[in-house]
Length: 165
Image 1 (cartoon, helix red, strand yellow):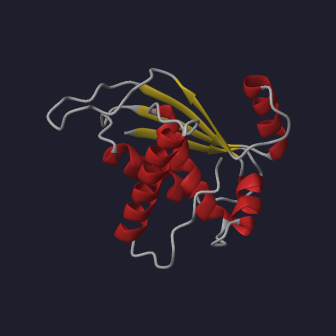
Image 2 (tube, rainbow, N blue to C red):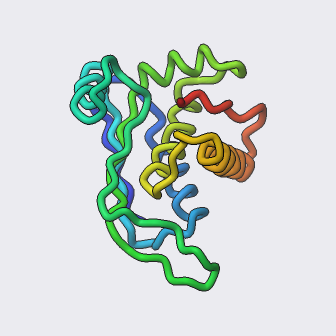
């Protein structure tokens, strides 16, 4: 899998963890190993501009996803996954830090960025959380992926609770 992480935010983030959890999520979702993903980390001003431009909403947000080839996980275990460009995930560490501090189970900015990376991957794969049943499915997958990744690394403590809306 080709995953690029570009930190343009000026904030130090754990880029390796973002890369690792993105790869784990894509593998778990059975996305073709030759697919491509880009993760860009930006400051609040850049995120606010994107939020206004693409969502017509004021202020910075935590994560935005921009799908390219609209890849989807294969529906059957024996089905060959399609190869292509997944798209871009844009993360904002300043918003992630605030959300981590305000979450019921307080956690670090990097833990929040890991959660947001999985959230962004799921959006690229067509998952959404507008309706209650969609939200339950997406947030359930998100928790399972984050918990699985943390478990494989022997990370202790509770996984970050979903703070994305």
